[in-house]
Image 1: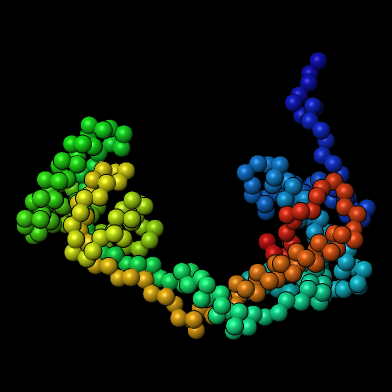
Image 2 (image 1 turned 135 degrees about the vertical axis):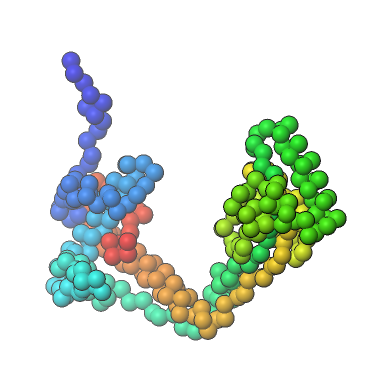
Length: 274
């Protein structure tokens, strides 16, 4: 008797909104818009999105709302259904514009978000060694300490030793110079070490790649963007956040009045806010 694994799995429940069935084929097409760790989670997210879409479309029809489809800058046009949902939300979901006080309060509470990153100019000499070879790393550290001692005695030797001793061939050709560095351009261990160094300081820094004799040539601290330049970005963020919350509340009201079968709507998002 031929019995496949799928034979033993329960069939998916029929999903419907006020008696209107959401076809499984439509959910399958929608899945690509909802990446998730597991296929079932993507399927559920897609199903919820289509349930929300159906709720909005049914409400637009009930209120006899329609609208002319809009085109974007690339010439893509809304479908009649998308236009109707947009018009419904514009009419029924009112979201106030953030005022200056709200924007300023957010700016003062989140200044870290509006600070440019620190800028470093540094050079290094890499003594490379395998990460999990204790004996090799011990020998590499001794070599790094000897190189550091030589440079401390005669700083002018740094460029020469970088060219002849460094295992970082890209920077070695430039005397060990790494150019201007900002957050995210080097590995975390190296970034942490740079943040702790003073301009002109020489130090040995251990990373997953080995031991670096690092010279910090310049450190320019990041600057906080003035409120006047950040206000528009803050206002857009706050307006979008309020719109998401207001729309979620509106959908919850529609769902509370509807008969939805086959899936719980918790965690659903609007198809207009993907």
